[in-house]
Length: 193
Image (cartoon, rainbow, N blue to C red; front, side, top):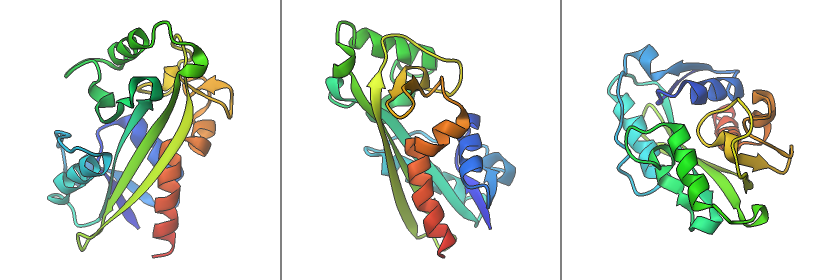
């Protein structure tokens, strides 16, 4: 079964391919969809659906799209829906991490609880949709740690491994991440179709 992933993020695509390894996972570019979608939704689900629908013009295969974010409890859920552009449009992940660290300056580690949230929408060939969610809890470190991962991974410390997402292997991350948990629910759905 072919599944098209509506993303231009190579790190995200690699994670999805590993988790859905028993399916033929294609990038949106592989079906000719060279699109960038403005995430104008007010929820993760709305943004995921916007991405999937933009790719629908190029293929009638199953399309999956996700939107995810980091929610920090001490900041009332920031950066949340705006995680990718937390420091502003056309900024780097490092700038987003610097802003987050600045806002958390002076806050003790145990008061830096946070969670990653992932919402995956599957847009079926008949245009029905199914939504799957995942969450991973942890804490925000006081400085970047590790070389791997992407986004806020160097700051997100997970109790399961007592390391940041950037300090663990992709295999370890793919056992506990918010995306893994959402994709696992999607995989169960697809396996039972």
